[in-house]
Image (tube, rainbow, N blue to C red; front, side, top):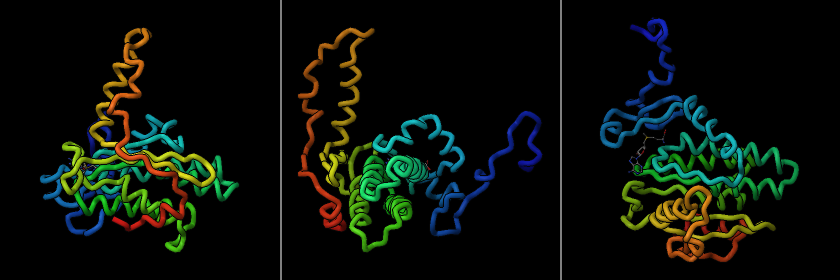
Length: 248
Ligand SMILES: C[S@@+](CC[C@H](N)C(=O)[O-])C[C@H]1O[C@@H](n2cnc3c(N)ncnc32)[C@H](O)[C@@H]1O
């Protein structure tokens, strides 16, 4: 039976579900698998764009908040992260579009709040490339611009080639998550945390909230080792971030 002949009451499949691409080298937004082997080996099936948008609408307010942090632990080539960045950049334009300095820095802040982990090297490379393209297009950047390289450096840190289940990077070391903050006047603050400690911090925070509005016993939780960064960097401007692009 074809899609158009679906029985009454059963919604026809979306066109995206027909798409496969065993033949082509690059993922395109309208294809849901790269090869049957990759599906079998890595469970690599991409979410169709229409469904991504519906899912993001469930947390619409957060996707439109410039500094809300998103971590996609199996990010593929960015099916979720790219539209999240696009929504954040729309918010940047609405709020800071009339001031080029603010627009550039808040756009970078939007980018710094997007995180991904991906097992396969080609997918993480595509994801970084897709995110950089969207960022550069929005601001009309070329490779001569420091902001282009600052963004590329941020993406090299935030989009991690590793195993989200084991919390290890491609070299087998523990995954590090970089926390970025914009402290104004063109300066960004960077602190590094281990992913493992952040997941532990999440469970401790739940305990801290206590029950039925009762104050928690964990009043000094901020001093707990899991909340301590493994590195605290001096504030950096765009030029300083750009200088780190491609270094290690
Ligand atoms: C089902 S696809 C989803 C990709 C994207 N999130 C989407 O919805 O379109 C799963 C992706 O997770 C990656 N993956 C599988 N196991 C992983 C793991 N343990 N850690 C990180 N990524 C993983 C695969 O390589 C693949 O790119």
